[in-house]
Image 1: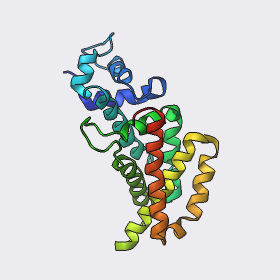
Image 2 (image 1 turned 90 degrees about the horizontal axis):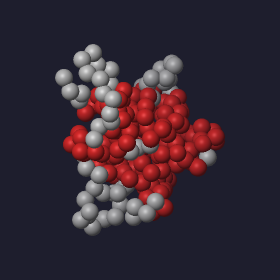
Image 3 (image 1 turned 90 degrees about the vertical axis):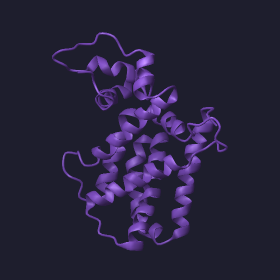
Length: 218
C-alpha cells in the first residue's frame, strides 16, 4: 500500500532542522518510511513531490503548514500538561527552537500569495491566523472561561503577545522566554486597550512583510 501524503509529511517534519522547509525534505521523507513490504532507497522524484504536495513553492507551503499544525499539538505534549497560558506559549516557543534558522524564510514564503496575478504583494492573513491559532489553543489548554467580548479581547491580546515574542525569538533566541514573560505581565493592560491590540497585530504583519522583502519575495 503506497504511503499517504499525511504519512510523508509527518516523516518530513524531523528533517526540517537539517534541510529546512524545502522540497528536499519532502523528497527524503520516504527514506524514513517503515514498511514490512516495501523499502525505499531513493528519494521521491521532483515530479512525485509536485504530485503529492504541490508544484513549486506550494509544496514548501504544504510542509510549513504541516509543521505549524504539529506545533499546536506540541503545546499539549510537554512533560506535564500546560496549566497556564504562559506554560502553553512557552512550550510553543520551545517548539520553534530546532528550526529557528529556517523560520524567517518560512514566514516570508507564507506571506506571499500563491497567485502571481494577485493585485496584492502581501497576504496578512497567515501571520494573523498563525498567532490566533496559538492564542486560542493556549486559552483552551489553560481552561480559560472568558465569555463574549472578554473572549475576543483575551485572545486578541495573546495574539499580539505571542506574535511579538516569536519575532523577538528570531533575532534574540536566548532572551525570548524572558521577553514573553514581560509581555504576559502587561497582557491585561493590552487586553483592555483596543488600540494596543491593533498595534501589536499591525507590528506582526509588518514584520512578516519586512522578512519577505529582505528575502526578495516582495
